[in-house]
Image 1 (cartoon, rainbow, N blue to C red):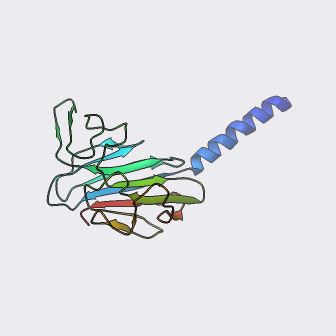
Image 2: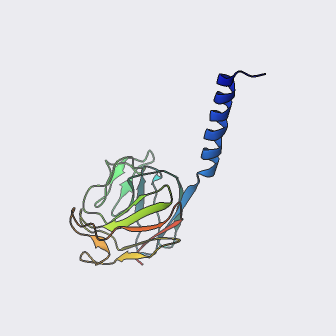
Image 3: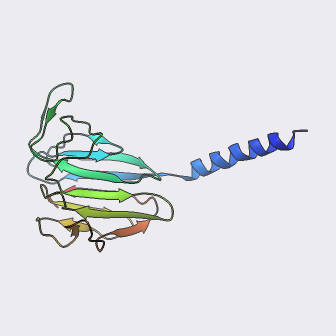
Length: 176
């Protein structure tokens, strides 16, 4: 017969494994509908890629991810090792970003987890690419020009945050 301490340890391992199995990832589908190439970037998961017109990039973001961002970069050139730079939205001169982009950039921001996910668009750091951002159980936010109504324009503006069911899937579209 197992000791009470051993039984508690087994129960803790089973509980953690059950909770981890219940957590899921949100799928972000990022599409370039612009007539020009966009180099989308995503942190803390995803990095970055080149998307020619009509192409799509899909990333899975783990449940519980907070302070996530997706943005488009323009006017980029990278060498075979992924070093280079972008005219807008650059993240330290690399194709696969681990840092947020530099202004100007149109920014999709999100926090995943629990019963609710939260998301918004921001042009606080400028505007560089028209963008829409939506979750499968919420409304679509669209920003086609710098002064769009769906995006944050200054840091203390808390009126643009939206929520949807926890771990929904997301769409980011450049040039909607």
